[in-house]
Structure formats: structure tokens, C-alpha cells
Amino acid sequence: MKRIDLNCDLGESFGAYNLGLDEQILPFVTSANIACGFHAGDPSVMRRTVTLALDHGVAIGAHPGLPDLSGFGRRNMDVSPQEAYDMVVYQIGALAGFVKAEGGTMQHVKPHGALYNMAAKRQDLSEAIAEAVYKVDPALILFGLSGSVLIGVGEKIGLRTAEEVFSDRTYQSDGSLTPRNQPDAVIIDHEQAIAQVIGMVQQGSVRTQQGTDLPIQADTVCIHGDGAHALAFAREIRDRLIQSGVSVLAAGHG
Image (cartoon, rainbow, N blue to C red; front, side):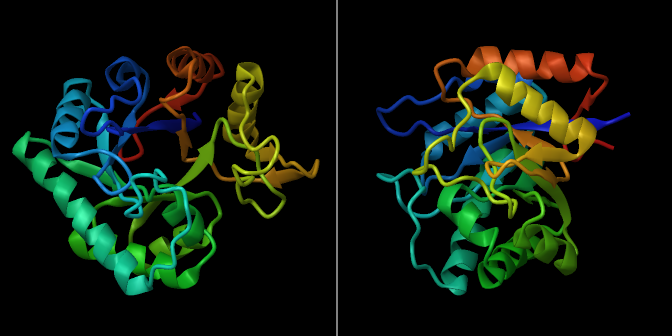
């Protein structure tokens, strides 16, 4: 039977700002990527989100990003590999403290935003991130863009990896995501997004913006929890996957 993990970026509120539908969406996902305070989140939000994830039996992962709160970590920064290593170790450690304090264990690490996209193509950044994850805990699973440099580097260093695909993003012929500043980067139509996910999981391919079918490995699907219809989509995508004979389980399950 085909299987897939459904992951969602959570814990993105901070201070007086309340973002996302964390508590409502948790029943429909299997892994939570929790912001660690650099691009979003704060200590109190981290603790609350860890507690919510544990209450719902959802696997927990650190979601380290660039130190760019005002840009939500989506703007490229000229960071060195050493800086990237230090940032990732720091953020994993911060979340790990809350996970341990609440009696849980951490499953994975998924870089966020610009850090994720830069690492998908850059060997030096990928090596720094993978080394940071491995040295903190070699049992952690490294999430990365399917077919990317980060996945290959993670496997080489000895980490388990989960190749990630996106329900609401379009793809380029080289396997990269269409940049958000380009037309049609984000899929708005639910049926189109669901069809894309089922195709990636069941057939192992995705239709690119250039009109070609790209082979793709789907271990985990990212669904975003901050859109206007995020909750309805999360419920529907899980139901449709199960109806199509796909088992929905956390990446580390089994």
C-alpha cells in the first residue's frame, strides 16, 4: 500500500500576532513543523504548539529559518555555511528543550522558506544543515524538497530523509518550485491541488509549468495552515488520499 505523511508548518504566531489555525488543523496532519523563533514563533508559542501536537498524537519537527521576522524568512540572505550550521543547531536545540520538557520526542527537521530553497540547490548550505541535524541527533529525519541537493547530502551523511512535495505549489521542469514572485506559483483551486498530490503519490509524477511530466518521489506532502480555506483543504486532502488507497502516517512511523 502507498503511504504518505501530511506535514504542516505551525507555531507561526508571535507576541501579539496570532497566525494560522494550528489547533483546528492538527487532527488532519501527521507531522508538525514548528517555527523556532527566527522567521516566526516565540518561546510561549513554541511551548503551546508542542503541547497541542502531543495532545493530537502528531509527530514534531523543528522548522528552522533565517533570522528575518519581518520577511517571514522568505527573503534570501547571504549567509555562510558556518552561519547556517549555527542557526540550525540553535533552533533545533530551542525546540528540543520544549519537546523534552513536555515529555515528547522530536521526529524531524525541515528548513523553512528561503533557507529551504537555497539548500535545495546549494551543496555547501545543504552540507551545513545536514551536519547540524546529524550532530544534534542522528536519529532525526531530514525533510527536503524531493530530488534536491539537500536530500542527497542528508543521505550521504547518514540521516534518514523524507522527500517532500507540495500540494499548493507549481513545479518547474528542473524539479524546483515556481518562485512565489512569478505568476501561477501558488495553486488556488482545491481540486487541482488534490489531483496534483494524488498524482505525485500514486503515479510518482507531477505536471510542470512547462507542460512536461516530471518523475517525483513523494514521502511527505506539505499543506499550508494559514490560507483562507486551509482547514477545509486539510480535511479534504486527507479523506481523498485515504479513499484512493493511500495510508496516511507520520514519516517516522514504522
